[in-house]
Length: 119
Length: 119
DNA sequence: TCCTTAGTTCAAAAGTTATTGAACAATTGG
DNA sequence: CCAATTGTTCAATAACTTTTGAACTAAGGA
Image (cartoon, rainbow over all chains, first blue to last red; front, side, top):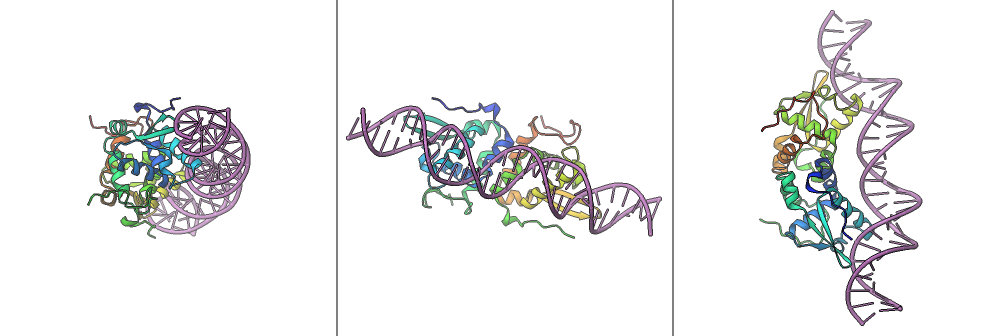
């Protein structure tokens, strides 16, 4: 019942960039980052897309090595693979998240005001 | 005879990431970065793809705001838009280039040994 | 002027990614 | 056990991206 994840050394730069180059997925990553490592269930992202479509985007993120999904009962708890990404591509995730944090064009997970943008 | 470029504030994060999420284009950017701001003509990249296909990829990079192309006689001289990208997405380009610099899976522009990988 | 060099444009084909709805599986709570 | 909740899978379609070759433009040199 564990889902397939690449290990750190299998994470590919072009694949990670391509996966992050989608507004829905970037919004997911931004929200995960704003929650500082707290695992979130898939259903937390239903603002962004239909259930089916979310399943697709979350699988892309997981298969690229950007997120980790753990099966807990009937939920999948999603976290960012911060340490693995930082080890593989130092500074990349931080700069993407910082840039995404200011991006008004990206879809929002909560009803706005959900994400703290540090002044 | 000047080509269309977005200005700095029109550069979009997801578009930049998507454009960089392609091995051919990442190789182009890596090579441009390795040449430290020296303008290169399109034909320098013919190792990577056919002339027609290069034209397509270079247009994508230019339209995304990643590169600038200046018409000089019958050549287009290409440079990285380092300052604009750094202003817009601090640290992003540097971390992408650093990660790409070590990536053996990316296509090479010269016959290898062309790019200095700092030890 | 004629030829070459450098690069673009166009239309077609091939391939890939995103989105949808219906049906399914697994767990939990009553 | 039954029903609800959570999320996946599948097949279809729509939409986009990549690649190709042939035809083209524009500048420069002989």
